[in-house]
Image 1 (tube, rainbow, N blue to C red):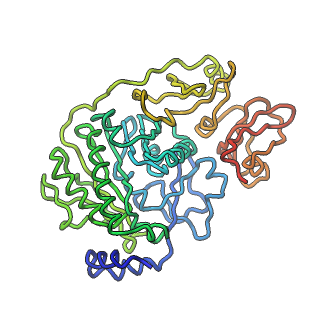
Image 2 (tube, rainbow, N blue to C red):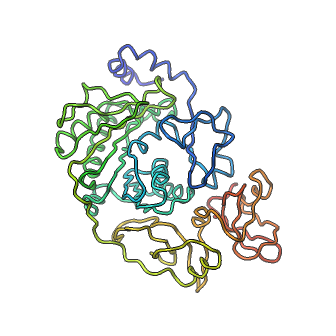
Amino acid sequence: MLPAAFLERMKRLLGDEYDAFLASYDKPRNAGLRLNPRKSAGRLPFCGDPVPWEPNGYYLLPDARPGLHPYHDAGVYYLQESSAMAPARLLDAQPGETVLDLCAAPGGKATQLAAAMEGRGLLVCNEIHPKRARILSSNIERLGVTNALVLNEHPARLAERFPQFFDRILVDAPCSGEGMFRKEDAAVTDWSEETVAMCADRQAEILNSAAAMLRPGGRLVYSTCTFAPEENEGVISRFLHTHPDFFAEAVEAPWFDRGRPEWIVDPADGVERAFRLWPHKLRGEGHFAAVLRRGGEAERTVGSLQKTAPLPDEIRTFSAENGLPFAGSAVSFGDTVYLAPEGLPDLRGLRALRAGLELGEMRKGRFVPAHALALALSDFPARADYPADSPEIDAFLHGQTLLASQKGWTLVCADGYPLGWAKGADGVLKNHYPKGLRRL
């Protein structure tokens, strides 16, 4: 039951390919996941064919249910549709850079960028909607990302605070969602031509804000999950004609179609360099991406940095006793202490949900390690390691106490992958798995 106006436009746009495009809606979806290289997972039993454009991406085997597996709770992978893996791959973030994901919730592309950065540099993940920002923060935590700042701000506000600050910026803009019609019924029922026009105006505003934050010489990727040319090539064409210091960059991406030249012309050289991901041409949903570069080679603006402090004595003692590689400085929100990533900007006046790796809380001179710390660790002296399909792991994820001989803070693991903390005394492990994450 696709909208008639949508079908008429797609027929004009695709011509001879229209029938093949329409037939793709009768084919099964290709669900996917992206392995988290931080966990050194290797290929898992429910992984099928690899996704060609993402080294850590796989299509799921039929009937696989990885969202229910303890590995999901441990952050071993992120469930992500294959086409959605393309924009972050095109951005090509590098270790040590300063990178912004401007519309980052729920966190698939942000955690993909984090994997590429290998824990080095600063990754700023922003989401304007508070509820979605909390989901984003939770996924950053689950994947064990240590160098991310999670913000809940309007893009225009960030543009005021961070002029020419970032080396690379991803703008996965909110859109009319036409590429998700096969995946989400709500995308069909919410669609209208008026929505397309409204989204295009909003996308232009977001893109303008992003442009102000990119340093000279930096790369920006604009992407959507819609087919509407008004939201894709149209937005980019308008942007390039009003931002002469930007140009569409030539990027090797043999998996994707180029955008159509009647919709986008780069005023710098007359070349169109947008990408289309069509569901009748590859195993994935509909997506669009354009790679832009800002001219010049000037250094990015550093700006003022967040005031930090030495790590509290209690945390340094905990680190030394357990052989943890804590190095750097701390930033605190109340009693909660974070290990600040290098180059953390001044956070005054910003709604920050996460500022690096959450280490834990200081409670009356005692250190209580955070769940985020457990998921970021690769090893810990006191461990309780059980098979992922064991009754002990099921009990732990349900918040139950375990019988065990360990004493003090203990890292509970499933097949070696950390799940969370328990505290041992008198032959039992008291469960410290967060109540909001426990299975019902």
